[in-house]
Length: 76
Ligand SMILES: [Zn+2]
Image (cartoon, rainbow, N blue to C red; front, top):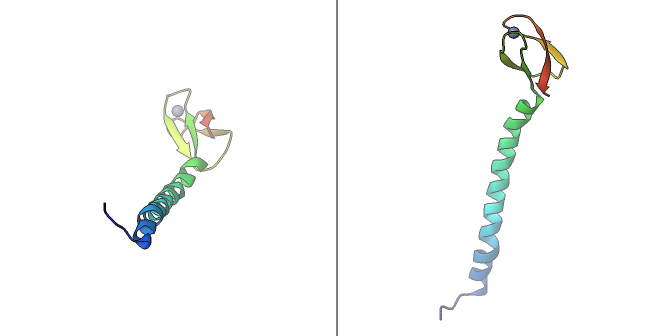
């Protein structure tokens, strides 16, 4: 049987999973930093010309940049 020291076992079963968890939390926090700007945007679809556009401000209605028709937000 392979004999391992207690320190080696602790590194294998505690240290490595802890390191992986720390790396994953860093990756997810970087992703959420980019996502927060996207979530502030409101998405609009023009009823008149079908143009889909997004604005970073949360208004219930906004004008279409293509034809100027006033549209309701599809997703805020
Ligand atoms: Zn339009």
